[in-house]
Image (cartoon, rainbow, N blue to C red; front, side, top):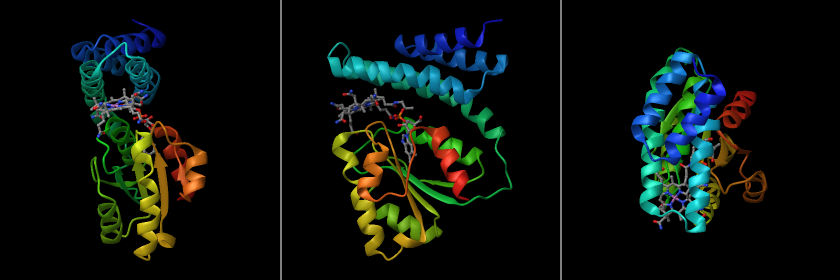
Length: 215
Ligand code: B12
C-alpha cells in the first residue's frame, strides 16, 4: 500500500496534470488508506492549486488551465466531503455561522472547504455561496440571529469589500451582537486587525480552532 507521502504527492500531481479522474482516484485511495481528508486537501490539493496560481501569475499557465485544475480539485474534494461529513457531530450546535465569498469574487473552493470543516466541527453553517452582496450577509445574519459572519475574498480587488461588511453590520445595529471572521489567500491577520474584523483564519483548520475557542 502507498505511504501517506506518496498519496499526497499523487494528489498534487493530479491537480498539476489537470486530471479529474486521478484526483477522484487518489481521494478514494486516501480514504482506503486512512489518510486524513483534511491533510490530503491541505498538503495535496491546495498546495498544488497554489502552484497553479503562481504559474498563472507568471504567465506560464492560462485561465483554461486554472479552470481545469480547479475542476480536478473539486472532483477530488467531492469524494472526500461525504466521508468528512460522517465525522461530524450531528446534535451539537456550537453556533450559527453565515459564510460566503464576497461580492465580485467567484472563487469558492476554499470557502466550501471552510464551510464543510465548520459543519463537521458542530457549527450550523449558512452558506450564501459566492459573489455575495454585502446586504445579503447582513440580512441573513439578522434572519438567523447569527453568531459569526464569515467572508472569503481571493483577490486584492475584492478583499476591500470586507470593510463594507463591518460598516453595514454597524449600520444595521447588529455589529456588537456577533463576531466577524475573514479569510482567503490575500487576507492576513494585519488586514483583519486593520478593518476591525474579530477573527482571521489562515485555513480551514485554523478557522475551526479559533471558532471552537470562542464557543
Ligand atoms: C482556482 C482559481 C480560480 C478558479 C476558481 C474556481 C472556483 N470555483 O473557486 C477560476 C478559474 C474560476 C478563477 C477565476 C479568476 N481568477 Co483565480 N485563482 C484560482 C487559484 C489558482 C486558486 C484558488 C483556490 O481555489 N485555492 C485552493 C483553496 C483551497 O485555497 P483558498 O481559496 O486560498 O482557501 C483557503 C484559505 O485561503 C482559507 N480561506 C478561504 N476562504 C476563507 C474564508 C474564511 C472565513 C476563512 C476563515 C478562511 C478562508 O481556507 C481555505 C482552505 O485552506 C488562485 C491562486 C491562489 N494562489 O490563490 C487564483 C487567483 C485568486 N485568481 C486570480 C484572478 C486574477 C482570477 C480572475 C480575475 C482571472 C480572469 N482574468 O478572469 C478570475 C476571477 C473572476 C472573479 N470575478 O472572481 C488571481 C487574483 C489576483 C488578485 N487580484 O489578487 C489569483 C491570485 C491568481 C494569480 N496569482 O494571479 N480563479
